[in-house]
Image (cartoon, rainbow, N blue to C red; front, side):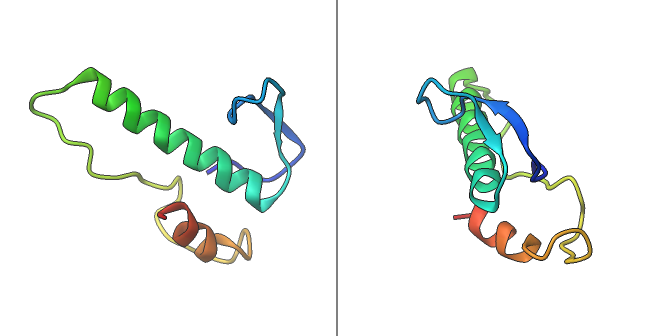
Length: 79
């Protein structure tokens, strides 16, 4: 998932403005946008022998070592 920082990501919500990943909600929003975009493009590709089963986080485990919200983020992003 994207790291929180004052990072310009682009217009992922369609309002015509560049969005920044500067808080938990922005991180969640851009992650959900990405997952929706992958789902859409995968469906449009109409693969016959490939099924999209899920997503993998950049780390293989959830730890509060880097951010206190990682457990909550995994739960919220899966909704």
